[in-house]
Amino acid sequence: MRTTIDVNEPLLDDAKRLAAERQVTLSTLVEDALRAFLNSRVAPEKRTRFRLHTVRGRLVRPDLDLDRTSALVVEDDETAYGGPRS
Image (cartoon, rainbow, N blue to C red):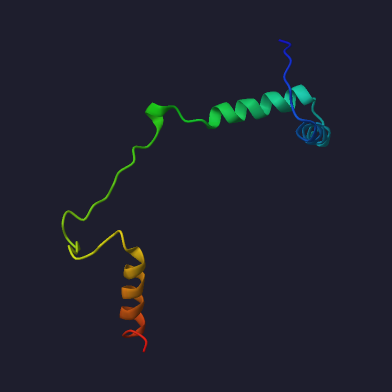
């Protein structure tokens, strides 16, 4: 089937160069690329479900203020490298 598409010049030049290197037509290169792209897309029902692992209350520190993450970094540094600098 014949169709017309607009492709920017640098991309078209790269595609023509690659087709020549592989000794295939530009049509074959575009078909192969489109087929590979469509095959790489996983159907929603085949996707692996995301599973969120939680600690179920263990290791939770109620005194942590997650809105002040810089304080957490300072606390980690002080724990790892000693007390606050004077």
